[in-house]
Amino acid sequence: MVSKIIGCRLLKQLQVIIQFIMKKISIQGIQYDEKSSYQKGPKLAPAIIREALNCGSMNMFSENLSSIENAMIDDKGDFEISEYFDIEKLTENHLNSNTKIFTLGGDHSITFPIIKAHHKKYSKLDILHIDAHSDLYDDYEGDKYSHACPFARIMENKLAVRLVQVGIRTLNAHQAEQADKFNVEIHQMKDLDLTKIPKFKNPLYISLDMDGFDPAFAPGVSHHEPGGLTSRQVINLIQNIDAEIIGADIVEYNPNRDIQNMTAFLAAKMMKEIISKMM
Ligand code: MN
Ligand code: MN
Image 1: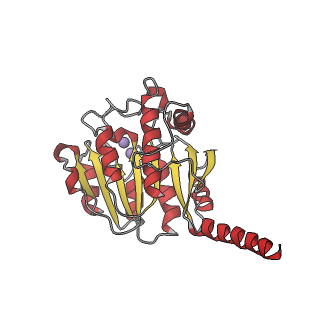
Image 2: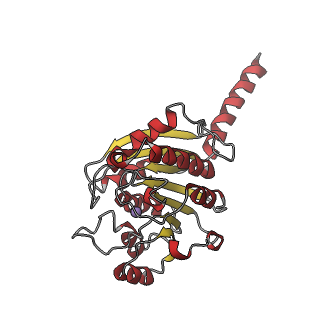
Image 3: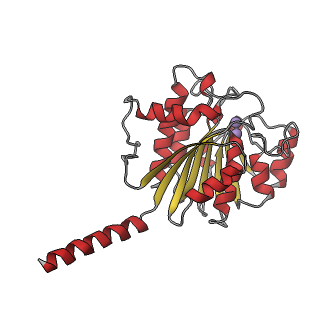
């Protein structure tokens, strides 16, 4: 009897230790689109993507057979943000010692405060940024924190060792200059070869702007930019990563522009694929 009780206690302690060692993933939704320059709507995205995920249309497995219905995943819910830098505080609160964070945005401005929070934990960070736009403006319409600027802020604050951008098809002279200044590695659509995407050595953060996809695959974005990535290309790109992914976001889904929620379903699928790579 006594040995049975001791055995039970040991088993419980072991479970606690295993849960502690296992890296947990927290999901946070950021309802924020104040820094969108052209159209509002991404604030509504987290709820609609969750709805697509949970409506019964798809199962919870990624293509590599891990389910996101998993004890390792802790869904913190969606947060309505009024002050921009509250995003940094919120992320920092969720970023405990053994937690990785997956964020549903929100417009792309949210990535700067999120990376700021991550930098306190990871001094060396690589970023894979998938987008039609390089988001490197020094300022946009007078706003340094516009959704057109987050990667300029990240690089000038030295928050990333390496920034690799894929899907870009909107460079202008200013942004090309900024890319040179910050040593950004840009894989433009016009000469894209996915076999040339480098291997990452440092902990990796993935930032997926839904307008990186061609609008034929993802019409629910504020800025339709033809000539983009296919769903399959982005899924393969994610699946072929062999670095440790320590955080990720999906941003710029604009439900107001969507057709039959098809972009929400793509975002939900990408959420499964990215989270399963984080596990
Ligand atoms: Mn962007
Ligand atoms: Mn974009």
